[in-house]
Length: 190
Image 1 (cartoon, rainbow, N blue to C red):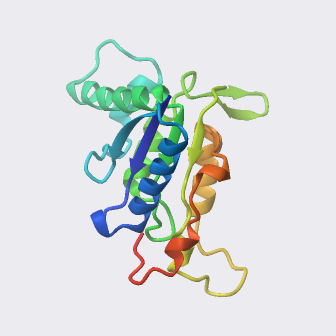
Image 2: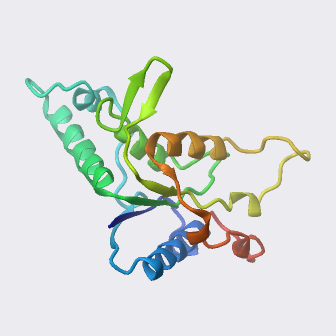
């Protein structure tokens, strides 16, 4: 079994989301000792923002590519192959300015490949049928509060939910450590 552990927090060892994803991976490995883990640190290995040069692969263009298109396609293909090989995803998605980090958004943009990771249907786009589990630890609310009770305070949750529906099925809650342990941690950081 292949597990892809992804962190995207820019705060290094001080990051609560990095500590939480590490806990989740350890818990998974304790239950599934044969798991092979690949680690991707998007704060260190950040794909460039999605541009027109990165579109050629998405539309199947392979001939007459510029040097920039070849470079961008190589990055996308490397990330896509790493993702496609994974049976389990653990994604650290802290909240910055009410949403996910831009480096994580760039990674997701590169994975959205028609015919490879999703397909269009009469009822809209659907994730490519593959049994993949995904965990997006949620603890950003631990350090912030909505302006008024019941008010939406973040588009991060909706973004993670939509991306999960595209990428994988949710991971069983039984293997995910409780995020509430981090909620009262002094100096809580994403």
